[in-house]
Length: 249
Ligand SMILES: Cc1cc2nc3c(=O)[nH]c(=O)nc-3n(C[C@H](O)[C@H](O)[C@H](O)COP(=O)(O)O)c2cc1C
Image 1: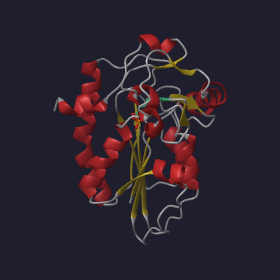
Image 2: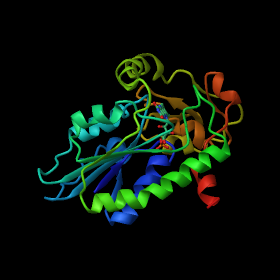
Image 3: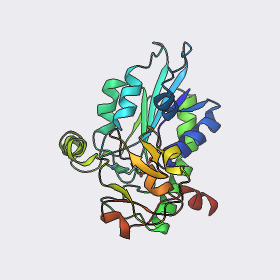
Image 4: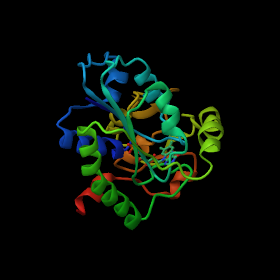
């Protein structure tokens, strides 16, 4: 069984590729959060994979909350794959305290955090997707062989990033208030359906953000009119669509 969380499709795509290779079922953690379903009972000896994006050098809190209530048989093979723009700091190691791991990988995918950074150039984004696509068969083979693997790119100053910067990010940066609509909203509701934690409602035809945002940026990138902004800074930044990179295959 694979459980994945994804704001903008990167981690979902990796989960789908791994599911295809291993023959395991991939389930979206968002479904459990939004519909308040309890996760399925896992079978003895099952492979249990968690696939998620790195947010400020750690796992999004909803992923940590999810794995903490997961009942995993003792003889299960437990692995995690995180997708990141660059590096993960000690994020995977910290995650493994809540979900002890037999194997872990990090893979680079295009950056999605536009309140702070520009999108990667198309060439760079394509390179990351192609490189990760090339890694997947090896990851799948290791999972099927239940190998103990730790292939995680921590990058520079990993402790500082995961334990200090992440704490500041969670405390000061994860906010809903700066989200706004600037321009012509067509009330399509795509932002509502895209939000993996059910944090957006349409009121009088316009999106209204509640207070349990995880900052995945799904709403901003999914808006077909590009009219959702986060403060002023995202006005000049592009929007990310993984599909366009997969079509270039
Ligand atoms: C809030 C936020 C924080 C992020 N922090 C990091 C980070 O610390 N390190 C990194 O390499 N990438 C970071 N990224 C980039 C994402 O990890 C990367 O784009 C990921 O593949 C997105 O996956 P998704 O499309 O499944 O949501 C961040 C993205 C977001 C939205």
